Image (cartoon, rainbow over all chains, first blue to last red; front, side):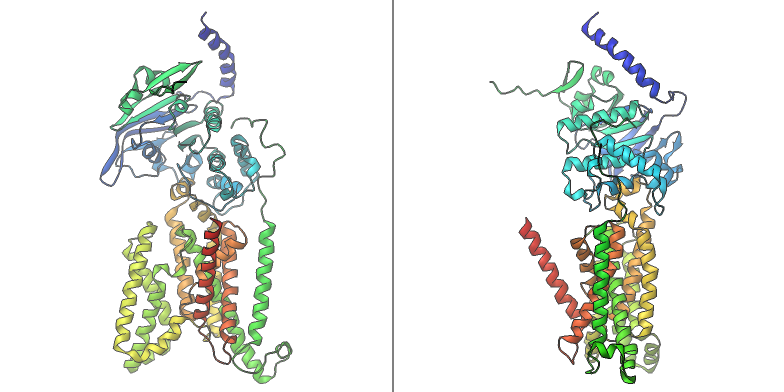
Length: 288
Length: 349
């Protein structure tokens, strides 16, 4: 048995254990989020045309592609924040538009690439994630407090609960925003560059968090990720090029098909090192 | 949700503390200042009588009239007018997500000025105009003008969804209506003096009727504003985020712009174009206690009310027995305060 085989065998029981905690597989159900023949754009410019995707519950999909390829546009369209030119988006088997505003907000949480400067405390920001549950006028219930607490624990932001956002660093702020998204406890998470402003170890924490949301929580996670190595830790990839969708599939399929090189229109080399895929710059290190 | 990492959050403070004690302290301070100002307003006036606390407690017959029919309605009315402007300023800054937004940015001020000009011209030129003018009064004309300007602004921007369009339309309307006002004044220079009182703002004509009107409108405005404060909190994170949280942006904007228009038009109608109170009051709250929008929407009116009371007091006291226009006082004090903020910011950087 090769080394790789042993590693896989050792990992197997762990995965079986994870499976137990997952909700029953939703194979017969509609995909958590899907779109058909989606066309979106701004003004005269069409950014994406004829995109069809099925995103299942319990998996984390990363969107990668060069700048301007429409990663954010795709996320905004799927979140219902951008009017569609053509096509449709369905959330849990129902057209996105047929959900009421609050029903939709309970099922689909969205994280913007950058959020406005705000004077609120961290817990006030996280509390905003609960409004689809409690309504705009009602007081928070204990279940809302519990959800906020879980979200802040998961992102490691609980100790800043009473701090003003303006007093936090960019990375700390990003974790508070992430806690706001998790506090919704929605079955679908859409995140636009959740790891921006974070140092590499914290990027890794976020990637781990997204993976556990998908695998343990059965959540459908979709995130645009700039860092290729980080994106390759996701379960699946959506690769966008300047001419639209290059491919959607598992990491293996993406690497075998060399979708990344097609999308970036240059040779993108990915190396496998100790079971991790890494993007290798085609630039040698300076000679020692 | 995953199990919490063991290293995080142990012994961390609770997620929420509902009422912050600095805010309570702030409210108490603001109320105390308001009380002091009210007391001082009652014993300071252009008339030479009754400038002592003893007189205030046991006024004679003539003093009673001055106290109850002139000074008290003026004080109460000034507070409510300032409160309305403070509320309108806080709402405008929240809706437009801009700290420099002020209550007049939808063209209210120039609309009110045009309304007053037209009514003065009408009264000056014909008997029918005079009769008409007698019915609605200067305050009515100002209020109608302000409302018409807001309607024109919203029409030009084709709805309330695009705040950038709304701001631009507000600027266009302000210029347009000011130009019309100036042209009308050129044809009848005699009404310029009467206009001046209104343009500079004055608390001198406040009666119980106007104080009551201001009070009622304030109560009508503060309730929806405070209820929608959390919507403004969400909006401060960005429009997309607010929408994704399940908030209806058109509903929020329409309601709050309604509040903004009603508050500004009423205040302008009663006290004229008093500048800077609406701009400065929310800043003063944010400078002294850092707040979310619910606290801001409660704090800014309290602050605005106290500010206009103080300005009113200064305008009556500084060149006794004559009076300064209150708008001139607020412009000086408010302008100085903004310069101070600017100076401090550049010093901190």
